Image 1 (cartoon, rainbow, N blue to C red):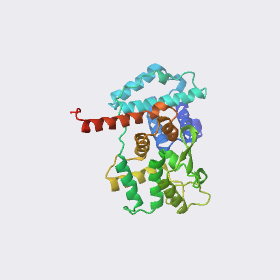
Image 2: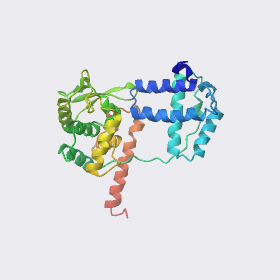
Image 3: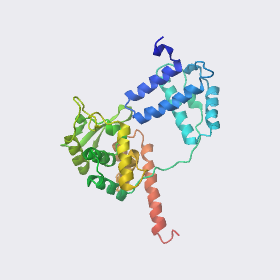
Image 4: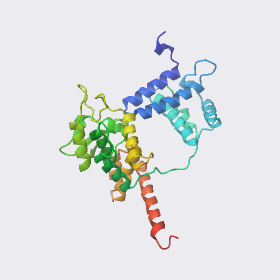
Length: 305
């Protein structure tokens, strides 16, 4: 019996869903996390060595029992919400494909968690970090590539998957624009600021690619740099030069949006630059700026104490 024939319907459905995520340009990090959560979901429904039920046979009561089991494991609410979101996305995919008639996972209530604003480094902290990288304060084998990673994450607000997905043909060095492929393969053009453009130019000039490799950012083998490789670069420099392990690629994207808003950019423009489908997603940066204003008021206004 072949591998595909031996798979349960649920396992096949999960594999098809993960393949769809890859085709839609989801990051390796996202696909990996979905895969782990859905594998645990499959394991719950695989009892005593029997095959799990097919997705259309999993009813609301069974889903509630699975959710209850997550609570009994004393998982935190954020983890439970993430696992439920993965199952909802799987069932939504199957609904679109006509493989189930209703997304029963949508009927389950997500546990409420307090809203936390993402930590954002100050302009001074972020610029000092990037300037220290540009000054070569940390000796690394690919300094041009590493500097361009930081310049584009902070200077253009890219997601890590968008950054490593850049190809040479997506870059217009003369006009200072890049073509970015975001979530669900949506494309947008993003302007590249001067320092980022200079770093990007040096990065491209220093490339030593394998034959036929069009990726802008390469690993040591001359192949496309994977997202986890870019994450490691960011973490290494952030710890070594800024002494801050909380700085990661998405932190720099938050900083890009927050600092633009603080400088007077309007929310609609920031929405376009970030590639957000909904303005409500972008509005969280307004909350960050308001939080900063409250801190300034508390520290400076004579009536604040």
